[in-house]
Length: 380
Ligand code: GLU
Image 1 (cartoon, rainbow, N blue to C red):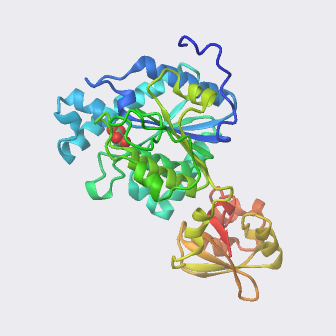
Image 2: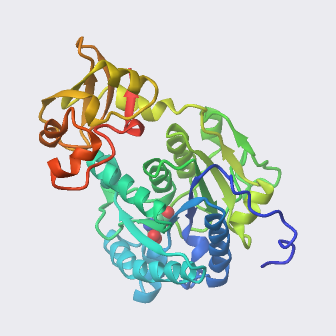
Image 3: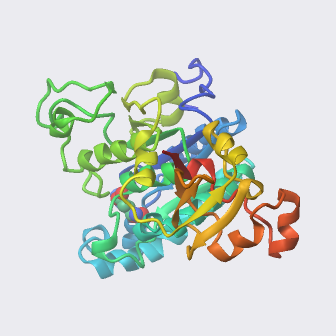
């Protein structure tokens, strides 16, 4: 424990709610000569372990694979001279990165799990649902998922490229209440703090408007990671639209998570009380692939915020796959909601009108909790 921290308040177990994503940048994890900053990381892992023990579920989004792999392979420019170099460096560094997380979390009796995802995995609705389900299951099992971009298979055009936006997307998939970006800078400033000594930290951002965008500076100060302030503000936009509060806080101190919980020093982008944007992309614009007709009881249940269960469904129309956008239609033909199907049309048709305890036998596999889950549904 670092000096001065002993007296700090215990981490607030409610920091941003029950589910938290913590993103760690490359320059915090890896020294300029390409080795893991173990002592610092051990302090962060102790903070994470304290939160998990206090009942919070934590997902880690960890950068550092490219920086670590570049050193092992002796590649120039930190492995970022070409896409091929970055892919080879990521493949080599990722295995070291995972093992250090697994070892340090293991020292606290915690199990780590690795998830490598590409941009496509989170854009495609079906794969997004699978990622969401896996994260949900891991968190319920008390595991700490450690996520990174699958840089070895992503090509330039289809990469996130920075883990800030990845962390925000993962936060949405995990239905996290908060995302904390630990960075080599302690927050958003009203002008570039490296150039202007009078630059002021913005502690709280209510709305991401043109003024806030103008304050973001696209240069990463370390030159090691790829995310600058522009990608952090974009991450804030993605996270808050999905209903999660996002904070940028300094990782340039020991026990950065406990410190942030104790002091709140950083920039916090508030999530709107309701998260209309996540529902907005469900309710508007996209072409649906089919419909499920439901009875009056189901319409009432949906209106009170419940998921659509097979028992309330009457019939299935169209040829949709699991993850496709479908309409939920009342018996009078009115579309009452749109959402993502948890089953394909064939399996959905097999279970309409059936009670939950009949589903396993009918389907031959463990059933999902709903036909359309309320988290993936927008009422119209
Ligand atoms: N995914 C990259 C890595 O692990 C880092 C991306 C970033 O710099 O944010 O090295």
